[in-house]
Length: 219
Image 1 (tube, rainbow, N blue to C red):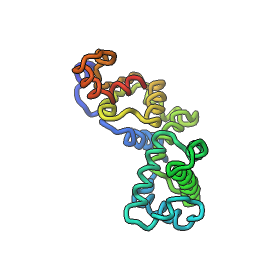
Image 2 (tube, rainbow, N blue to C red; image 1 turned 60 degrees about the vertical axis):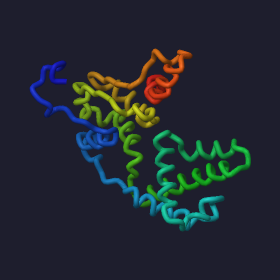
Image 3 (cartoon, helix red, strand yellow; image 1 turned 90 degrees about the vertical axis):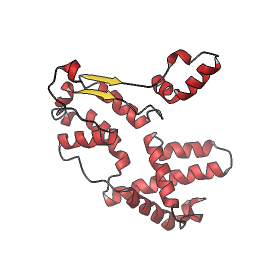
Image 4 (tube, one colour; image 1 turned 30 degrees about the vertical axis):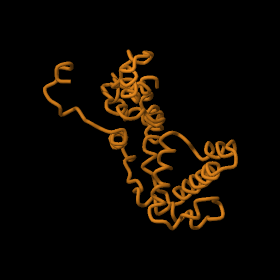
């Protein structure tokens, strides 16, 4: 950084996760860096929703009182959000699935996600899992464009995210929107393309080792 861009220090360089980047841009845009509900708070809401709406569930109501169960459901709902599975998608998958435990769970997750979103709107609370979706909306909102002009002089390096997993749908959308705005965006991925189609056993081991990076490269 110091050599390539002829700067005297690192005061203008920041190391951020995707979520911290969202908060950083919210604070610059003004008024959008608001408090979000905690994981514990989210779990408590989920537990209450299942208890109060037991007739709407096929499986979840049986375990609502078990210690840690609502936290597990919260984690799964967060994963669904990151990979852009909304309640309509989950309902559609449940309709397609044959009668099974999986079918019932998909239907329950669709119902729970719908109830949770309704409750959050009633309480006027923000889920931290929505931060990247809010950032995507901000980057596309015309009324905030003057506040976001600083991005045109910003260089971004993305590294480390593809070492053990691929980018999720929220992250991919943010990367695409930032690439259209910033001065420069580079992504570093740890992979070995030379071993992809090789039948050699050593290359097979190497391919498995670098698989997350390779899948990220394909994205």
